[in-house]
Length: 241
Image 1 (tube, helix red, strand yellow):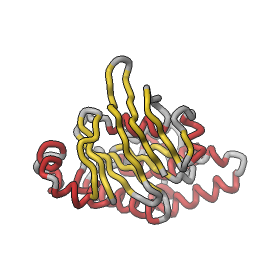
Image 2 (cartoon, helix red, strand yellow):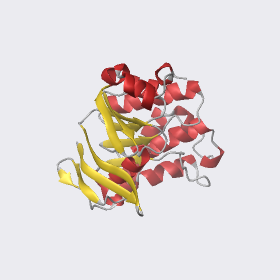
Image 3 (cartoon, helix red, strand yellow):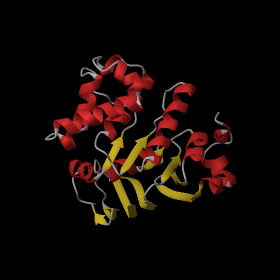
């Protein structure tokens, strides 16, 4: 579904990604792991079209989208849930979801149907439909941004640190939802600091270090890679501490 080939990204003169190559197959969950500053968020932003690479290519469903604007990539089926949730705080829960359905803005009945589907997926949001998004708890805001992204019916969902700042019981619910979204047919690229959850959820993984992929393989292989465990995920990461 998605292929990155020899991707290079810079912030001004500062290199951020160095010849990144990876792929995601249809219906997969792929984890992208690494320390802070490794280039994980940069990779997601490049895929979504928020950042433009200096060189290399990005292909989505057989089409070169390297120079395609971000809003057009969204229409093609790529959705990004950025780190930090970023709800529209002074709009209601329902209005936030409706904005996520801009792809169907000429089909109001379709938008209403998708909003109802998101409320079925996240019953707590239905209870708060008329409440301003900025008054929600962190977990509820994470549900909202997931729902808002799914309003565009993406083929690929890119998630940047979905567990960040959430209580353990909420994190379990969020990852359960991610697995359900994937089971329904959406591929997922997951950036996540919590290695235990990431590697128990994904099919495969890549590990980034200072903008370079230094390990890849099945989650089982990565769990057994002592270099990954100790140098890149931390000695206790797979124990969830």
